[in-house]
Amino acid sequence: MQAKSAAPPSSQRPGAPKSSRPKASGLPIIHLFAAGIDIGSRFHVAAVSPELADQPVQTFQAFTGDVVRMAEWLVSVGIKTVVMESTGVYWVAAFEVLESKGLEVVLANAREARAVPGRKSDVNDAQWLQRLHACGLLRASFRPGREIAALRVYLRARERHLDYAAAHIQHMQKALTLMNLQVHHVLSDITGVSGMKILRAIVAGERDADVLSALIDSRCKASHDVMLAALNGNYQPEHVFALSQALALYDFYQRCVAECDAEIEKAVALMNLSREIPEAPIPKPKHRTKQPNEVNFDVRAAMYQLTGTDLTQIHGIGPFLALRLVAECGTDLSRWKTAKHFTSWLTLAPGCKISGGKVLSAHTRKSSNRVTAHLRLAAVTVGRTQTALGAFYRRLAARIGNAKAVTATARKIAVLFYNAMRYGMNYVDPGANHYEQQLRRQACRRPDGSHPVSAERIQGHQRLR
Image (cartoon, rainbow, N blue to C red; front, top):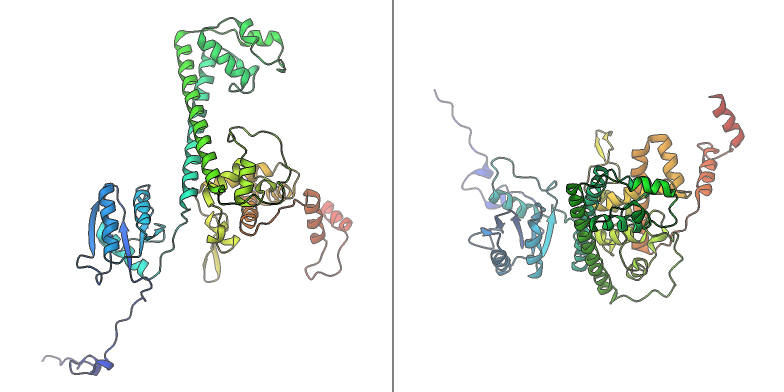
């Protein structure tokens, strides 16, 4: 006998009224005219809602003409906002073309836009991005304006030229060592004025140690006998040839750096055209020493007009670092609601992997953010100063180690930078003594804040330990 199948419920019967049928539930559509693009090195796949086009998914080549045609097709079907993943550097050209057509382009983090489970293809990725963006589930990554983006390109190119030049400095040092020219015993930097004079003389054919020693500045502390001994080398033609090529390449990259400095100065001056000079005069500089490899124009005055505040008053931030921070973050930091959002974007805030009320991990995420790298270097420098930030770094380094102290100090500098840029805060350093006295007063109080204990008694307990 065959068991009789149960009768379907009345809501699923063909004759049931429409009002009693279950309605399909789904995520609400927030961006109706949204599109998703899967970026590739050879072609891009664009997807729109099936309600807007007969062919909602189309493939375009990565050539400029095809990218323009893709943007025109999106505009023709009524698209207003487009989302794409940050795939290498292939997204930059598409981003700029779409933006020039008046579309709102959202650059999503690939870590947040997960791939579709199951069989993966470019079409599925594009449709998945379009669906997520239509429901408002993707956040836009930070992308500065056109002027800031251009300034950032100039600065990054300048940094690459300096890296290449540094490699050729090592090549010159190796060639000198192979010729047994112990210049490093006499000069601390072969790229200084005296060092470059000696290198150019050797390449030009000079071999006399007396003539070479005469090129050294009179302020050199080494004796004349040491100079003669150090500049008496074993000259071989192949090593001189290597030295001449390394010197030529070093000079070439120095010219490239000078050209970048000229473009950076033009870019900053162009942004300052629409900004008034602050009424308050620029404060006195904290340090008058010239930084190595700094930009060849008055960066401090230009940044004071651009930002409306003197960022160099914050310890650890010099004129060149202030320029690099502005080039990476822009002048409008309202994109981040609070300083906590800003430090979280920099991956300087603790992680928050929590499950069941238990903290699984509080480590900061790894990041290739250039701003984070600059702030960490500034934190290491600040740790050697007699300032409040320096005392903060040393206190944490003694408690939890140097690595975590660098992260915490970099975060504190980032908060000061955010407050100065967002609210025009004028930073005044209270000093290392003030910071230590404040910690001492906090240590002398009980948890309830009453009946302070004397500092002598605390020191006595510490000695007994």
